[in-house]
Length: 417
Image 1 (tube, rainbow, N blue to C red):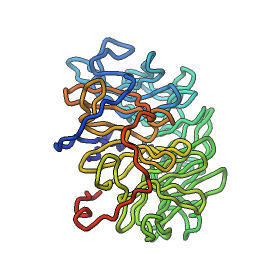
Image 2: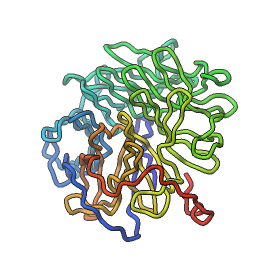
Image 3: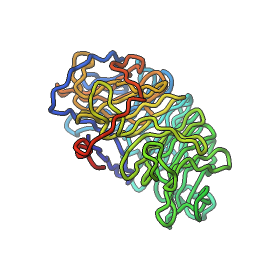
Image 4: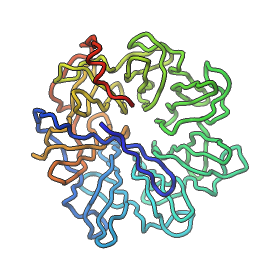
C-alpha cells in the first residue's frame, strides 16, 4: 500500500489513499456497484471527457467529487461535480470566478464535502486562497486571506484540506501568521471557533500548541487530534464549549495494555469518536466515549478470507456504530466493514466491478453514508471510474473476536508507516 500526497498551488496538502494491486494471485470476486462516472464518459457542463477521479464524499443519495477533465492540447483542468448519480452537475472549475475575490480559481483541492445544503471546498487563485461553499446553487466565500483570524488582528494565512459540510455549516482548519491555528465553523458570513492553539488541554498539561488538520464534525460535535508541549498528543472531542479527552499518550490501549504513542485519522458519529492509533507493538482502530475505549480492529485481527492478520489498518469512517476502514493483509489492500462485532470485506484489489479488475482505489472518510461507500477506482485496462458500492453486499464475514497470536516471523512482514 502506498500513500500519495497531492500538493495544490494554494499550498494545501491532500492526503489520499492509493491501494496498489499486488502481484500475488487473488481469487477475484465480482462486486455489485452503481456507476457514477467513468473515464469513457463526457463530463457534465462541457464537451470534455473525464480523465482522473479523486475520492468522493457521500450524503444520502448525493455524491460530490473532484476530477480532472481532458481539455485537449491544454492537458487537463480540475472541476467539482455533485448531485445524484443520474444527474450530476459541474459545481466549480478553474474557469469559475472567485466569490469575494479577483479573477478565477486556478487550483482546487479535489476533496469537496457534501451535506443536505450543498458542497464545501478549499480552492485558490492568483495570490488568493480560501474556503468556499455552494449552498442552494449559490457560490459563497466562507473565509479567505482577507478574513480576520477570530480573536486576532491579523487575517488567515492558509487553510487546510479537507473541509466538512454539516447542514448549512462549513467546518475548516485555518492558520494565521505566528503559528495560530484552529478549527472554525462558518455560516451566514460569520465564523465561530471550535478549538484552537492556546486552549487548555483536557486532562493534560498547559495549552494546545497545534490542532491537526484531520478532524471530523457533526452539527455540534467535533473530533480532532491536538498537540501540546513535551510531545503531548491525543484525540479530543468538543461538544458545545466543552473539550473532552478521548485518549492521549497516557492512555493504555485495549489491544495490548501499553500506552498509545501516536494518533491519526479520527471520525465521529452517534456520540462515539473512532480513531487510528499505535503503540510500541500494535496499530489499531479504536472507539471511545468518555474514558471507555474498545478495539474495532488491530494488527492482531485475522483478515477476512485470510489466515494472516492485518499488517495495517487506516482511515476509519464511521456512521452510527458501523466503521469502514482501509486494511492490508497478505500484501493486498482492501476496504472492510466492522458491523455488530464482525469484520467483513467490502472489496480488495483484484476483485472486479463490471468485469473490470480493480488495480487501485481512492477512498476517504467522507465516503461512507451508512449504506454505501463512494470510491474512485482505477482498473487494469487503464480506465477509471467513480462507483457507489453497497456495504450490505460483502463476502467472507469473520468474527472480530477471532484474534491470533502473531509470531515473530509474521511481525517481520509488517510494513512501517
